[in-house]
Amino acid sequence: MTTSFRAANSDIQRGLVVTKKDLGLIAALLLMAAPALAIETPAYNCDFEPSCEVAPGMYGAMETPAKGKFGISIGGFGRLDYVHNSNNLGPNGALLPPTIPKKSSNQGKESQSILSARGSRLWLKVTGPDFLGARTRAYFENDFYGDFSSGNENPQFRLRHFYGTLDWSNTQLLFGQTTTAWGILPIGTLNYVPGTFAGSGVTVRLPQVRLTRAFKLNPQNEVKFVLSVEDPAQSNNTGTSSTAGAAPNADTGVLAPNGISTKWSDMPVFGSQLIWYNQSLGKAPTFEGFYMKELAFGFYGIYGNQKALGVTKSIDSYGYGVYANVPLMRSKDGKSRAMTLDFEGTGYMAANLTYLSATLVPTNPVIQTTATATGALAAQAPNVTPLKGWGTIGQLMFYPTQDLGITMIAGRKSAYHYDDYKGLANYARHNTDLELNFKYDLNAAIRLGAGYEYSATRYANNSAGTSDMGINNAYRVVAWYYF
Image 1 (cartoon, helix red, strand yellow):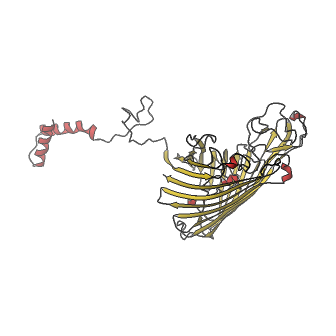
Image 2: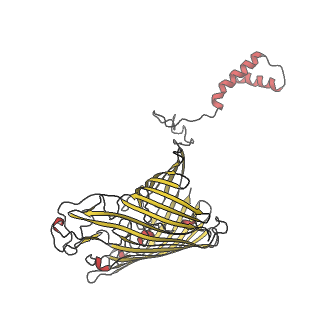
Image 3: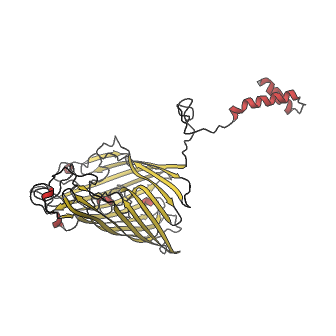
């Protein structure tokens, strides 16, 4: 058949007369060749085995992109950290712990080096069908800090964000897990933790429902209001109650920490934000140098309550804070980072918000009673008060060129009214964090970073002969590949 096809084709090219028999033969050959020449559209989500995406073999459709029901995009970054700490901060030492080990401890006498890829992230974005005039979207993001006790050679998957949104022109309704409304400032540090170590709890992510509404006052001014209903994560343990008859510490009146939970909540917490934006000073890059932000000033707050087993009095959990962003040297066109300088800062007061990284205590406990004797908690005086704390943190971000960013960070988190903590042995009075970071973009995908970080914890109520200070000096080199 191949010879006849070539002969017929040759006759056509020479302009010779072609018979009906020749035309019929050509048509038949083209029909036979069509399946091999056609570009097939693959089927997806088949209900049989083996999956049609890979049938008829492991190489059958390896180059075929997988597609979901709606539009899906994927991205993230691979990240490698090298960190040298002057303390032994354990297998998770690429990040800061809640407090720095005391100098007199074994950890405080040792140093460590860590290579870790656990800070890598992967995200998916989904665009679905419209609903009542709103665009529907979903966002999923994970990293690999699922088990903080595991080594860097065995990273564990961890959910960071997973939520859906309905977006109108000035209103958004969000449901799922994402960053709490408590706090506005995400610190642009190489470490990712100093915000929670000293001065900002914005990196905590909670299941929630959130409504955001923007009001355009005029071309220069806009106000944004946020209201959220969130999971009641206030102290370090929120979901269960302790064994009946659990007692506070005989000397301190503090409810039992860690293994036995003595706290529960019968209501969610409520968060809010109110932020004013103004265009008069232009914009400058903020978090990671990825976003341009105008002059902004706002307030944020959160409220909930908890109870302790055997104590009928509710324990108020609350916090309130202020936030500001000031472009000190504006971008020339709203896009270029070269020769820009931005200040961003926040400060707050809080009570019983240990889980949200606002109240500074050793680990647990987070509430205190006036009990001074042993016995069942139900028999103790129902005078339960939340431990309080305050924090403040700020950063200057300077871009001398488009690709080079320099960030300076200073933060402090402290117990409030030290006497309230006097019954707690070895409690942390305050944390201090200072950083100097450099980031350089080689191209759109590869970024390099280097920095120094000083972190310190001041302890109190120590037994004789022990140190009352913990200090860590960290030197860090980081490489990212964004995709």
